[in-house]
Image 1 (cartoon, rainbow, N blue to C red):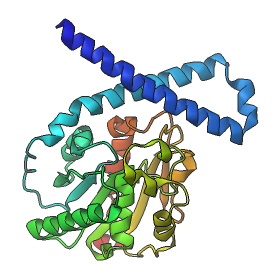
Image 2 (cartoon, rainbow, N blue to C red):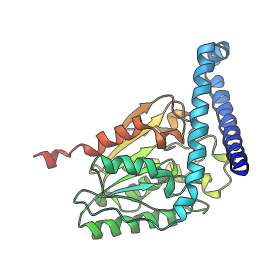
Image 3 (cartoon, helix red, strand yellow):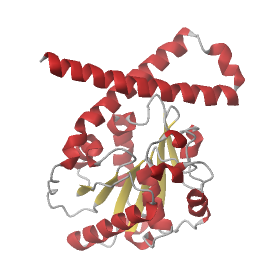
Image 4 (cartoon, rainbow, N blue to C red):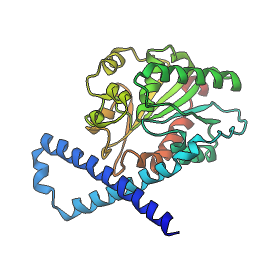
Length: 280
């Protein structure tokens, strides 16, 4: 029991240190952009908000780390449903286990069937990962007898979804492309990432420029849910996607978005909406 407690404390210490360092960088970037923030840095209300924000993010990140081994186990097949399939794509350093709570709540809302997949984000090239997404979408369309699926991507997963839709011929196969904490314009924290794949998330990278220049298919609805207080997408405005629906939440960090009831409620509302031609 003492060993388990020690391991849990070490995990919290490691995730807490990571979260603290990431928010220090967030603060550094924000203060340089708006020097007036420096005068308010020791305000009690602001310190209390920051402490709560970092505590929630530390706990959320620790929970996703603890759940990580579950992503290596065989995936249970979702119960057969007549609805449109939903494919959930994880980001860097995660696997499909990070979606456990979102998946459960979406299923309880009667959405789906819901599918997840593992992606090897330690690769150096985004295209093989996008090819795997394309194969999975085709499998779901055939298995469920539908023309289109909905795709939700967290962080890098949202970039893969856009690449599939905009550059890899997936426009006719996706009804709704939803980015959750997705760094559409990159993140200034990307150079610190250990995986070579993070290079595509550096602001101004060749890949992001190609993606930004690619036409956005009119038949696909794009939505972004992002947090003003994201500790990994820096600056937070990088999560905005021009000419798309953007929903801002506050007081939530990058990993906390995966465990937030507010975020899942937004997803349920978005996915529950019918297209105009479906209402006719």
